[in-house]
Image (cartoon, rainbow, N blue to C red; front, top):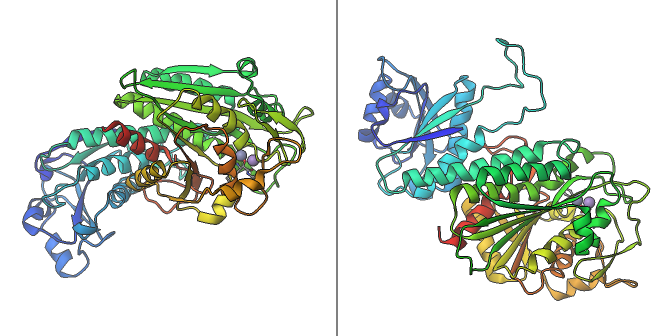
Length: 500
Ligand code: BES
Ligand code: MN
Ligand code: ZN
């Protein structure tokens, strides 16, 4: 979606649809120009009680003259003191849905009425809501014949204007929001692609494209390089499939060369059948989303490069399939990780932690300032936190708190789970240094305990996104299916670290 900003009178914007965000502190003087343009009906809507600026209150008028917005939609956002970025994001999403319902390709979103102290975050959130809402995935569908309409092909809203009073930071905030959302949309597209399209090789090819688009350095390790690195854990997952694994490394050198990098690691399991410990058939198709963490990291790197964030950031995506052929790893097999720790593979379906182990160990060697990883790692996380919050766990309390507040700013909230030493005992193996599962109790925690064995002393936080990266949604700016979580969270975190 193309975005522009405009800081003049909203009634002068030539647009098929102007959506005006109106707080419950209605300011009639401010709204007079817009209301007049559509016949002064606002005061009647208000006096009748139909419109009071409550969240989701809506009221549509059509222009009387021949200039200015053809339609004006007054859209309530509730009281100003309760207004949040997420509410603005949601209102922007509803604005795009309104444009779609009227089969319009462009709209304007007016934030001029949000009082005298507009938080620049609201501008960013508005841009995010618009751009995220405009995303859809139709690259694998035949287009309907020209001139016919199809429910599968809603109109695509191509462009929007963000209207606000002249204010510092408007253009910058909109630019940041657009870049964040475009990165996240790229992540969603990668997620949406099925396993036969988004193989590890394909994901690496996409990463090359992203590096090109964003001015990043890229390095891709294949099986030979992994062998040379001793990445036996990652290779033990890949050996059950005919598709070769890849380890993608994207580098953004935006900071002082002397400062330690931030590392983002994402699980890029392009299809998880469970291996020999095969999953039940029901819902297995959703395991194409097991690369959601990797997608979020690639999307975040795209935005980081494009914005030129002043920090050194490295994105790492270990990518493999988890299938079951005659050479697949079997339950009970012992494999050797790059870190030198032997792992008894009790359950081949606990493969995410295996590919992440080698990736984390590889990254820890760079002595980064911090590592944040994200992975659709455990079904247990879906039971613990459902679909509204990711889990965050880590070795460093301050880092966990940083990640949590980045999630709040991004509208991708997470919640901490403990990582006490006692849980680690569940990973004791009779034959190897550790085993890859710790039983049913506290499955999300023991998975994180396993990962923690491979980060050395680097401050590290882990996001379990099994319940949040995809699924049905009630959020106006998303659609059912892949949603890019936690791409925006990662970006907010990096941005805060960079002081940007
Ligand atoms: N990719 C799955 C986790 C998952 C489950 C993601 C549901 C999204 C929705 C992961 O590889 C897995 O299979 N984990 C196992 C671990 C178990 C064998 C210890 C699980 O959670 O059942
Ligand atoms: Mn699995
Ligand atoms: Zn998995």
